[in-house]
Length: 223
Image 1 (cartoon, one colour):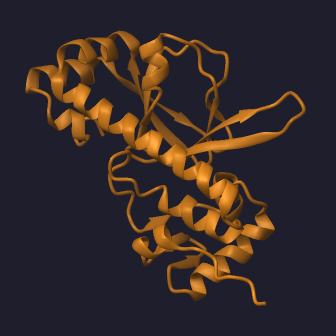
Image 2 (image 1 turned 90 degrees about the horizontal axis):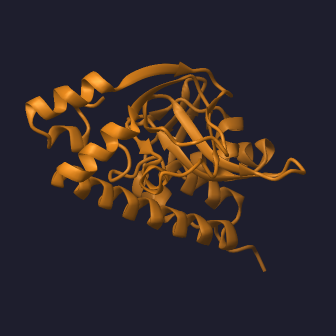
């Protein structure tokens, strides 16, 4: 993953090998925490495989999804730069393999590598754009359109390399990403499938028309 990453390919050979030597991987089972709110941020975290979700919870049990993470994506750079604590929970929606870059390694790259800094700027800009888009989606669109945007959000080239056309997500997991119930997710997937935008199977969800998903808006209600 490190060698194939956008920023990794821009490093010199010796510099990349030094980074690889300092990083390590660990498995995280579906439903388990990758990071927890309140813990000190000690690593920049990448997703080697699987799908994860960043969310915040209230004392009364209410929870809202902030963003999703697909294979090839990284998160936590803002918190590491501030040398702070996690302000959200990161949870594996499917079985995941995560890559951990120690904060000292991250800081060394940030202080010495111009390509790495360019990547961080691109990543943080794309993430901010994603949050703005999600705010608009949550306030203005119905559940089917929110599902379409949640699927399209897993295909941000600035944030993730191509995750492939087949997403290994259950309806419950997709509902968590979109912030809608499992029942609404099922209905929305049927609508999107009839529109020719996706194909749903036991293996997962195959994206057939990414541009169509990004542009999808529910038809107006009949008068």
